Image (cartoon, rainbow, N blue to C red; front, top):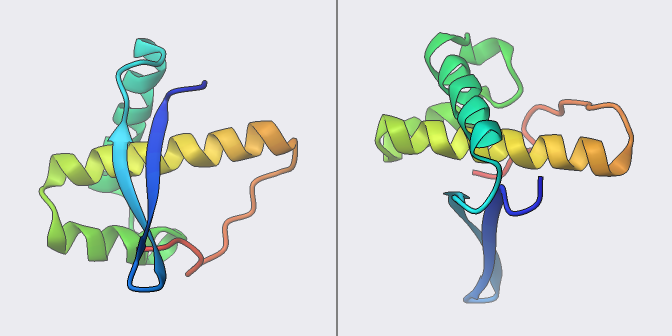
Length: 100
């Protein structure tokens, strides 16, 4: 699962800014495709008020095109999956903890 996602941190005016670059094409092609399909289902079919990432999705949807939103969601799903697999702990969604 390495090289599936990429993100960068940049120090701008004293604040740490995270900039998501999307999913790189260096990883497993099938896994990337499955993550994008799953993200598309979440973006198009989920009830935003019932999921923890709802506010993040809604705010991002106002700023970027839909396909960019879908890939950003796939990137977030990949990062969550990597965190769960590498820590060995269960996933616990915390509303409002996802950065915009």
